[in-house]
Length: 347
Ligand code: NCD
Ligand code: ZN
Image (tube, rainbow, N blue to C red; front, side, top):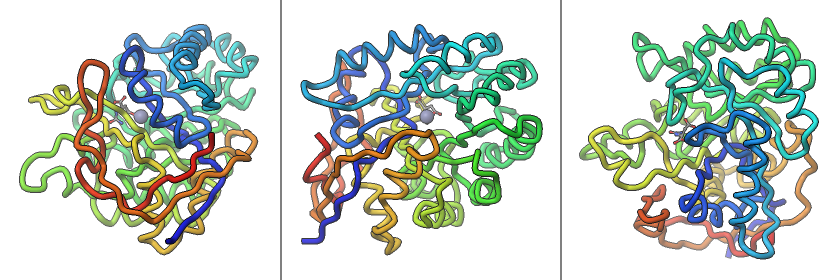
């Protein structure tokens, strides 16, 4: 049986939610990943280091006995985030980055930044101290087509931002287009990007196959096949500026299967296995470790994980649904077969 062992991976973009939902989903990530960058878009959002530490404690309290999973906390940038908060973050070992959502761009982004000029002083403090800025890289303009929002973000926001703050460390999160791939490749080493399993596995046809498919809806939305292919090529290239970030974003089934369904796809149940499928299909399983376990840790200045995990080529059935607090979630590829199975985890 075909088998691979790699250093334990990290997830550099994860939504763990809070309360009973957190308790339901955390085990999935903790089983596969050593560490994860935890998104701050709770309700209300995590805007201070103190709140991030409180949230971290709730995550630690939910971890199964004996787990060594480490949540890497982030704070949510608002028009009112002051440079002082960046200093507090820099001095704290548990909080690692600041997340920028253009106001209203996605789930719980209402308190995001309304105009980037408003946070210049804070960005300056980040550039000086080397604290990474994690970008939801889409504009939220009603007059920009939803499929063009990433590309317009590169032109209107990201390019001028990088001109102005040359030392700012930036992670362009969950990239979805060929333009983003090219931009990151040509960018300085201070710029990197995460790529999700859904954007590697599917194109936008998945959203409309024989009817509307809310469980394939996330933001940024799935794009054309040519973009998917560019993302796969970037992920399997081994290029140091591309790494794993699932953007696993659980929503209760009723909130997805709704006249106004929420954006977000749950992938934590089988994340590393799904990435393995992508790398295998591209004939590049030997590059999986760089993408999943090395490049992100190197970018964030974290030690590479010493433990190993083992994946076997073994078909298993992904459940139709999973518990989610009082409700349920429909996981990515629900009811379908996964070709790789995690047989020995890092714990
Ligand atoms: C995320 C969520 O549900 O929190 N949704 C998503 O579609 N990716 C928010 C985000 O990262 O955009
Ligand atoms: Zn996200």
